[in-house]
Length: 292
Image (cartoon, rainbow, N blue to C red; front, top):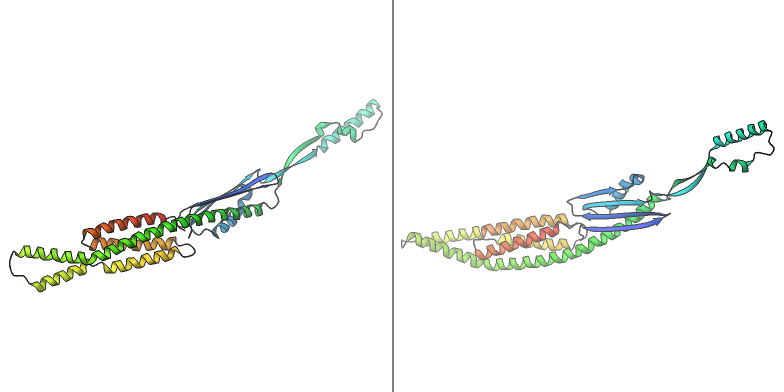
């Protein structure tokens, strides 16, 4: 069992550029993935989302890829203004003819004109950038899944303890049912006696009314179904794969049965147990909202 809350981050220095992948997830009803990538890597968005879906079936997942250096290294390039160089050479030759100067116009002369040369830094794309990002994403996902499993184990332990508490209260309710029915019968007889005020009483009719009352207030069936839901819930906690939706459904059914017990049972002690049962179910519900 895994929680939907997790975090993973991995970084790598490649050709002077720091590449990082950070993934965080929180609870969500479905699987929603948000990706933030540099423009140079925007084409990888769909592939990264598919990679994340392989390990995250529920939750809101945010993945952020950072490239400190723009995804490229730099290379110093020397550029020659050839047109200007030709004009220099042409001008020197004309000056040589006009002034009848000796000597030759060679590369050494041309190299002395510094404005003919410029040095620029050109970006050089990092080789296999996409593979680097995919590898970092896989490692970050491993960290995220590990965290989700650890938190899932903590949640599982807490839920098992709460199931024990619920089962204890159900036993209390079950033991109380015969006493509650007996008390309801006694109260009914008392009310009938008071209404008749010494007049003759049809005991068969009274017995029939008591039987009908017992049927209306009997919560045995609800208890049986509730115990079954608790057993299924406990079994689901041990299942592999996403179980959050199943647990949420079982909680709804458990809540429905508890509400029925509260409305049918005309007994103060049972009502008090119902209140505590609702409180435990609400605490369980808060935990289940974060289970994948």
